[in-house]
Structure formats: C-alpha cells, structure tokens
Image (tube, rainbow, N blue to C red; front, top):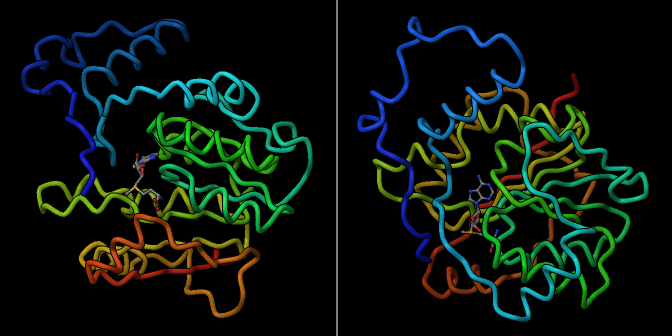
Amino acid sequence: MRDYGRVTSPNPKAQRSVLPAPDERSAPDDKAEIDAARRERARLYPRVTSFRSRRGSLTPAQQDNWERLWPSVGREVSENDRIDAEAWFGRNAPLILEIGCGTGTSTAAMAAEEPDIDVIAVDVYRPGIAQLLGMIGRENLTNIRVIRGDAVIVLGHMIAPASLTGVRVFFPDPWPKARHHKRRLLQPSTIELIAEVLRDNGALHIATDHADYAHSIAEVLGSQSLLVPAETAVPFSTARPVTKFEGRAEREGRPVTEFVLTRVPR
Ligand SMILES: C[S@@+](CC[C@H](N)C(=O)[O-])C[C@H]1O[C@@H](n2cnc3c(N)ncnc32)[C@H](O)[C@@H]1O
C-alpha cells in the first residue's frame, strides 16, 4: 500500500487543558466569535478522517498545470461554500461526485466517455489533483471540476440535497488494521450523507479490492434503507477503466468487489 504520510493531529489528551470545560466558557455573542470558537475546537479536537495529511510537492509540470487550470476548474473545500453547479460548469447537466479521485485516471477517462455528464472530483492529495489537471488540459475535458479537501465536508456542506445523479467511490483507502477501521470512509454516517445528496433514483457506485472492507461495506449498506441494489441500468456508465492501481490488485490476486445502488425515491 502507498505511504499516506503521518498523522499530524495533536493528541487530544495532551491538549485537553488548553480548552476550558463547557461551563467555564463564556457564551460567544456574535457569529464571528462562534466561528472562531468552532475553528479553534476543530483544530484542537480534529475528528477522525479517512485520510492522513501527507506532504506533496508538485513537479514543475504539475505546478504549471496548477497555475493554469486551478483558478478556473478548482476550489478548496469550505463549509461556507454551497456549490452552484450550473454556474460553475456553465450548463445544466446530470452531476456526478467522485470521492477520492487520486490521480484522476478514472475521472478523466469516464468524463471523456460521457461528455453530457458533469463530474466533480474530490481529493485531498494535491500532486494527484495536479495530474488530473494535466489530463483536463491536454484532453480539453470541459466537464470536470475539482475540489481539494475532505469529501465528508463536501457532502455535508457544499452539495445541495437531492442534487446529484451519481456518486463514485473507487478504491477507498481500506485501513486494514482493526484499530484504524474507524477511519474508513464508508461508514453509516457517510452513506447517510451520500443518500441525502443523491436525487431520487440517482446511484452510488463503489469499487474495492479489499475483501474485508468489501464485507464491511456490505454490512453498512445492508443496515440502511435509503439505497438499494440497482436492478436496472443506472443513469450513467458504470464501466471503469482498469487503472494502474487496479491492475496491481489483479496481479496480486485481489478481486474487485463492486456495489451499485440506487436512491429510493423520497
Ligand atoms: C487508494 S486511493 C484511490 C484513488 C483512486 N480512486 C483510484 O482508484 O486510483 C484513495 C484516495 O482517496 C483519497 N481520500 C481518502 N479520504 C478522503 C476524503 N475524506 N476526502 C477526499 N479524498 C479522500 C486519498 O487521498 C486517495 O487519493
């Protein structure tokens, strides 16, 4: 597995004395103060995320891609930015969110195959995004936009409810050690957020090559009722290109499990 760097979160025990207990805190009396308090708490008590911070410097070519394309096709994650997809893409088209696009190999290939569908790709990893930007530029892919940051925030704050035709999650980090399972992206809370942003009969497409994660995903999906296995074709292609990542999984004898589910009408 690739090295995803080191956890940089402060140890909550070591930090506990820094924040006063709830009853010692004075009530913030305006929005700016509340926001500042929330940011400070998020800094001191970061929630468990499905990714680790990793440094990633860009090659000169990636830096060039970034400077040329990021201002028009990218944005940073923000809890205060509700996306207007029609304004961002300059048209009204079915919209897919791809969570954890990595270097964007699938993103670019699938967007090229379906020019009538718009795709928002999300990842935290800047060099990977820079590679995707390179493909967007070279292949003139006008139907891709990119958000850098935590997809859980994107789902919870940036995407309007019932607005997506599809959500793709290809090869989410499996976090194989039992003590890290809480970091897995596909948990009941994330599935709930995905169900919230999918429009009626929209679809969720997941692929994983990790048997234990596949088992856990099946359990999570089986314990909710908003998404059900798709019995007919979904409103976008589920044909994925075989990425370098998947090719290695095949060679190492790790079969890929896929899930395709549709949103039950509200
Ligand atoms: C194993 S890689 C798979 C990449 C790509 N989907 C593929 O098939 O090659 C998982 C990716 O998910 C990203 N990721 C993990 N948690 C994330 C999150 N909460 N928000 C955005 N990206 C995330 C990681 O940075 C990484 O690039």
